[in-house]
Length: 133
Image (tube, one colour):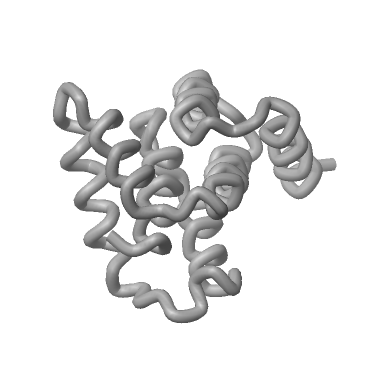
């Protein structure tokens, strides 16, 4: 898995965590892949492959642990905050944070060993970007 694959897989995992992938979340993932510099050289044709991987892992008993193992093994530590920021943006994309999404975000913070203050700043930024009138 490439670092970009890891980021895409994590975004898909957040979207699928509540067993309902919403259009706003898919649009957010596609927008990130299309517009962010980290994905400049990424082959979008890999998104369905990453989706299939995440869905396969979610069907396994220890699939989430396996996903985090793949991410830790293939994503440089300097991109852990980027991964969390993308995950927060996908979770907030539809305007509602569901319990399953919140639990997964908490697990991501733990697994990636993110500093609580940095995570709070990332969460606040995501919240600000996704406010509604």
